[in-house]
Amino acid sequence: MKKLVYALVGPTASGKTSLSLRLAREIGGEILCMDSMQIYRGMDIGTAKPTAEERAQAPHHLLDVADPAEPFSVTQYTALARPLLESIGAPILVGGTGFYLRGLSQPMDYGFVRGDPAIRERYEAMAAAEGVQAVHDRLRAMDPVTADRLHPNDLRRVVRALEVYELTGTRFSDQKLPDPEEVPWRFCLFALDWPRDVLYRRIDARVDVMMADGLLDEVRRLLDSGVPADAQAMQGIGYKELIPVLQDGAPLSEAVELIKRRSRNYAKRQLTWFRADERIHWIAMPEGRTMEQAYDEMMNTIKMKA
Image 1 (cartoon, one colour):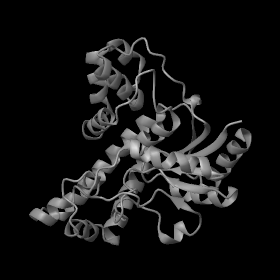
Image 2 (cartoon, rainbow, N blue to C red; image 1 turned 120 degrees about the horizontal axis):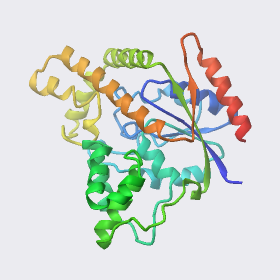
Image 3 (cartoon, rainbow, N blue to C red; image 1 turned 45 degrees about the vertical axis):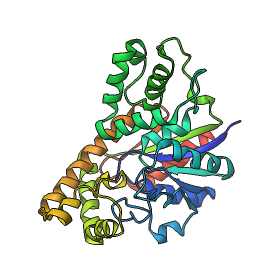
Image 4 (tube, rainbow, N blue to C red; image 1 turned 60 degrees about the vertical axis):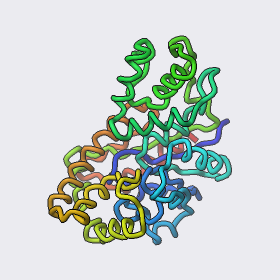
């Protein structure tokens, strides 16, 4: 039987960290960051990175592995994460970066054509800047048959189809698409399903805490240390909005409201992405339900899957 990999996924501010810490204590697990911002050194407050106290509760991996002045790709992440999934007895992926989960839970190469990291990274950057729909639209222009078969959120396969087309000049329509089960792990995925208005209040409250904890000073330190304002890391929500405050004297209150709005919009995109993944067990969080009850539901589901 394949090794079981646990994962807490879902939108920002949904409670992934607290559930993952308790799960890690329960099963003796180790946590692997699956967040495209928490990988960067020196970016702690704006990424809601686990605190020193939280890290003391369970071993953590893939935090602070990248220089914020340098770009970091899905390919680089999977190269670091895959050996850890192999070596850790009870790995627990925690984060809301769907690209990373997709990279880990599907084969690295599709079809007979060898991959080209430069092409993949170009389309991944396009998805990050313009959204996955823009990449899917590009595929539709080149290979409408494959585009009809693939959901826009299935970025890895969409990019692979584009990659094959660019490398060979032929469409991907006749290629056999791999099944996620071809990877060497079984994934047990969970997400907390909050009412939308509750989730948005949680997001707004988190932004207020970040500002009180010194997010503006964190952005200032990063810029003063030489991280370019246009670096990939500085395009993260919570950072790019505060740069004009520091460099151009833009109103802080307006920047904070923009962070909240963009964070809510990001959460909506995350929900769309993860809703398309039928493997995820969604734990409903109606009014009055406690995290203790959510944890009990998660553990009961795990026992059935073990």
